[in-house]
Length: 461
Image 1 (tube, rainbow, N blue to C red):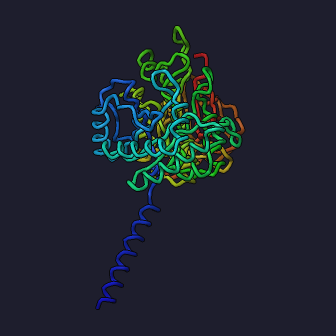
Image 2 (cartoon, rainbow, N blue to C red; image 1 turned 30 degrees about the vertical axis):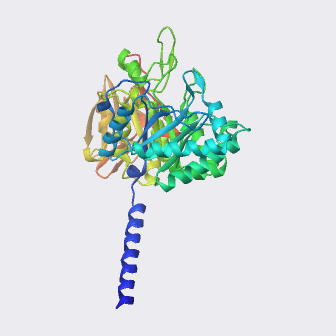
Image 3 (tube, rainbow, N blue to C red; image 1 turned 45 degrees about the horizontal axis):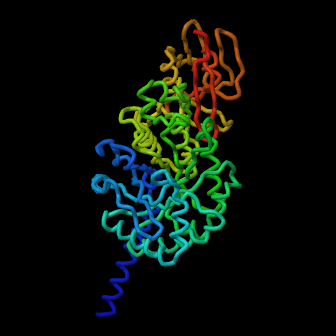
């Protein structure tokens, strides 16, 4: 009987393990994709109610300041952190504390880290104090933000990382790090090259600071792409790479929400002629493209700082949430073929539940878009001759005919050969976008790294 009972227990345990493993394998991209909001409590006085913890997976509260002797500077707003933890946990989001940062009271923190990490005694005390802080505030993890170890201090950095990771593991807490971006897919900056493989193994994920290159190229799209690729080439798994995205401009340092308040059009572009200093930044379209890139080959996005977001329909957190909701069911292959359409700077979303079809890339590598939605958006009228299988589109004196299944269109009666054809798929007509919209005076840009098509009115009307 005892042997039978033991076997039953083992079988039940094995079933539970198998069930949990199957559930982890079944996680959708929407569930596993991280949306991290840095929250610099000492810099902002925004009401906590504005923090959209229901749309975030992680909040990183900044900053907890270390001292050379291993003690910590007392937190400026302890009650604020407690309120955020309660709000975030109620919404299923995790809260980490960021230890460090670039400076404190206008003095760089790098020398502080170097001093405390070089002493076995002080390093041990710092780790104990951090772990005590995590317990006191019911936090889920720690972000190490040492900017930046150098050749002389990288060994001490590694000691701090390895020992802090071991201590946090005992509390079932996580460790992350803020690391630099890279302007090359294979050759990063020296501060990134120095980060050892042992350090990278310790981090549950890394937040890649893909910003602050300089003023007029503050955080371009290509930099996001190469930054992800650099850490992939370093052997970091895609799911552990979180792409950092800025919500501020340089050199003006205006916040995204400030720019939106100045002029709604600033939301959709990456430059504003503000005074006394110009503003180079990421508007909502660029941040959407970066999010798509991260969805395709990374594990999440991080906003610095989430307090700089708006709280209306132009909100970046809301945009990311909407994009995740629309793509969370897609496989990795399907996600790579997902097409975003931007018409005159505004996204033209294609939602499956509307039943109007969704864009896709055909075998000729041409973007095919459901006919009705974009054409009605530009004010064209559409009719279909079912007997002859010809779609007719009219706008402002221009008439375009699309014979279904043929490699031609007609523009005001003149036949034009095209390299793909209109098709009917799942009961919806799909059109070769460039050929049709060019006839109506629209220009097209294709951003391959994010599978985004930009449509803009190129006519003189």
